[in-house]
Amino acid sequence: MTTFAQRCGIHDEEREQALRRTTRLIDATGLELVRFAWCDMHGMTRGKTLVASAAARAMHEGVGMVSTLMLKDSSDRTAFKVFEPGGAADLPGFEFASNLLLLADPASFRQLPWTPSTGWVCGQPWFQDGRPVELDTRRVLQRALGRLADAGLSMKCGLEIEFHIYRIEDTKAQLDPDQAGWPGPPPAVSMIHPGYSLLMEACYDMAEEPLRIVQHTAQALGLPLLSLEVELGPSQVEAVFEATDALAAADNMVLFRNAVKQALRRAGYHASFMCRPPFPNIMSSGWHLHQSLLDARTGRNVFCREVPADGTTPADAAYTLSATGEHYLAGLLEHARAMAVFCTPTVNGFGRFRPNALAPQSVLWGRDNRGAMLRVIGECGDAATRIENRIGEPAANPYLYMASQIHAGLDGIARRLKAPPATDAPYGSSAAKLPTSLGEALEALRADTVLTAGFGEAFVDYFDRVKQSELSRWEQAEDKDDFQRREYFSRF
Image 1 (cartoon, rainbow, N blue to C red):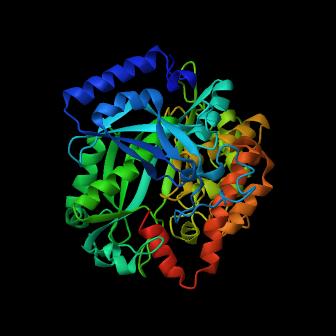
Image 2: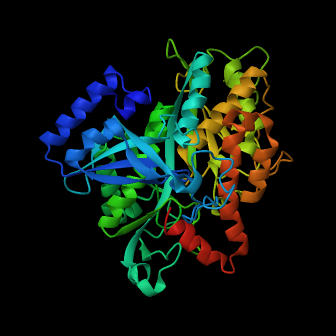
């Protein structure tokens, strides 16, 4: 009799070997529980916790999950009326909050360092008849990477993640049943360092205790952490990771963000990946995505050029980037406004796009220019030549962020687009401006036929519906600050 994983067509000899190794590890380490996790549209992990003895069978047969988990907006409200006739007409298989099955990858197994006797595996949803759920955001990136592979290319990404850590002073409001809400209030917090002293060693020393928790958590999970830094803003920090292949980088981002929030919470700290926490004097947090394309056969960085192209100056893309690299850069510029909603998907994040704030405002590129949207890094002959996209916020879903880069860049390569000269005035240019609101960003996406085709109209319709639910509640909120405290600071 075949297992559900076999009927889905994913259980081969390699997966069987990984399952056996994971089962042996669970037994040898005496684990009591295994969390079966999945990343939702908002980049948060959800799932079920099984007793250890049930884990192996669950990796064969799947774990049931209610399908409305995929239809939640940022407040956890279901954006589709699944119990009304026609309420899920565009989403066959989701009617009436029907069941999906979560199949975990046994090779993703880790033992969680902050909680005793608990393992963790990452999975993806399937319909009960064995079809993959194509709206799953990890599959969205996998399809985009498939397009790259068809072109003989792969993608490498490095992560720079800014976020805020606060000390929890009081959870009374958060856990008071009389103040429960949907979503509820965050804890009362204080800062771990005063800020406005970029990379000041004394500020790092003040923040060392929670940063040690971040370090130990990341390393215990096998994440390729390179550095931890004190950022400019009060209580703001940054984590930098070694570049890996794109899917691993996205998986690492999901795991890091959710793991450090849990580990810090147990130690009395509140980590927030919200772009602009709801306090008067803060600095916005960004997520800078470093990216390059590799020849899938040789591993060579195809953005790298050995000598400047004839007749070029440092203001020209071809002075440093190969023809492929320039076309990719031009594709990112061409579709910048449409991709913005995948890079900055919250109402809150658009407050970051302001002049002279080490954040972009216009659709421009620059050579090692931190005010430009795209920063080209490297020199001729440098195997680490890459493009840094600076429009991301740390709350972004990494699978969608990276997929948007691929679809935009591939269009630039296919059409052999040319990049304009590099900017030397990122805040004084007449170039097109990035969207200034979630609504404007959603409109830009719907108007972009290339990105809509790349993601698929069904996915764009679905994504737009969920984000419109969030936007509608924001527009109706009488207290905008309270909306952001509950919707983003408490949860993200």
